[in-house]
Length: 584
Ligand code: FES
Image (cartoon, rainbow, N blue to C red):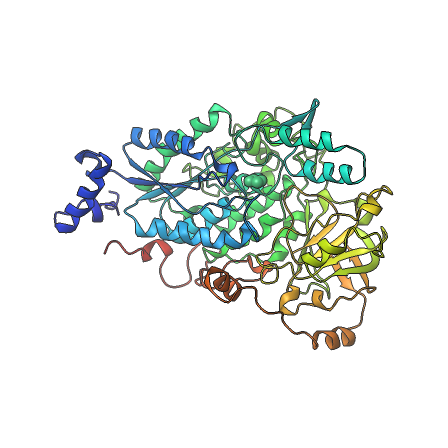
């Protein structure tokens, strides 16, 4: 027999509180029948007109409600803060943890038995996964889906990726202002999130790979009617999950996270996923050392031919079979027994998956790249690690030594990078400081530093660039990111000076400043922190509590302190779900 519904402690009471809970709910016109032992399903909606990628999620929520009602549940939609990638300053990343806290506490505080998470734009997916993992109630994710492919003069256009490409073309004088304006309207022509394998498509694909969505959810275009169909089925499924008490800690395990990392490598996914997966895993006490990404990357080929690593777009991935077909190709490398929201294992979910276009989803004997798309570097410049997305970088720069051209912060960079007097050539290494979690603040996506126009005009298309910031998943180039510890806390990046030599050696996983230890220590002893960006409010909380990139940039006080063993059991104490207070 299943345990009593949590919501009945609000709606099933015979006392004064029960009267209040039911009576006030009746202001919305519900009849008594909804209070009679129906699972109450929260629909956690990140809809916002300020988050264009999620602006269609009210319609998706209606489809979820149909499924919940049909399965005998009682759906209640609620908003949280939403994070629109193009608009938020200083960066949406600064608010990921705020949204995760909002999601967690909204679930915990209300009379819910289960929750459907509606997301899409970059940070909304990890924020919901983090919050739902900490809250501990049964949860299923419905992603909003990618936009239809952009088209310009019969050429497909990818969100972000082609902005960077054509911006360089404009600055190099190869397209004109009129063409640039025309491109603007041709790129984003439907609802949905960015339709390259940027952070949004990566995180929604990984949510599917780790078993938090129904099979095939991630790649259905937002504008396709099947988006609402899978939303309806997800609404029905969460009602059953409540009865099964299928909580996130049973789905998000070491095995399922490893499956997600594996899929991230196979799809040439965003470097941002490294930070977000670390943060999600941390909410459930799963230790995820940075080296694990590299170990998995080393033996996982890139097989999804999607921009920015490849040629096609998410719509093409959908027609080719979507994430299930990618997972089918690498099935032998996955943990087949990882449990998912379907109640079935990963292997059962993808049993009938097929690839319908071997140029979009390549077979293992014809990959886009034989090793995974992301490499973790160590060295005296990044003792706690750094990241490079090799699948989107120039192979000729994978072993490179060059003269450092240093920018102290983003403002300094913007002021000088196109200055014709800047002493820079294509063999130089561009270094940006103060772009990390505390220094940015919020670790903005500064990392893909634009190449100076005078070099673009000479035909230079890539250079080595190094920073402690992040890069948009839609970007490309030989860009070393997430250097840890960051320069703002006195990491070695702070010690780099103009004219120093820096060596990047991807094969040996090294990034080094070519000075000896004595000189490095001498310079680091001179470190003086800058004044913090904030002295009050959320900004102050962020600066005081944010962890470094290699720790997932979560707040130190939000990480689950109880560690889980290989079997997923907590070493001591109680599970997150058991800590939920029932009522006031
Ligand atoms: Fe929302 Fe790219 S701006 S996913």
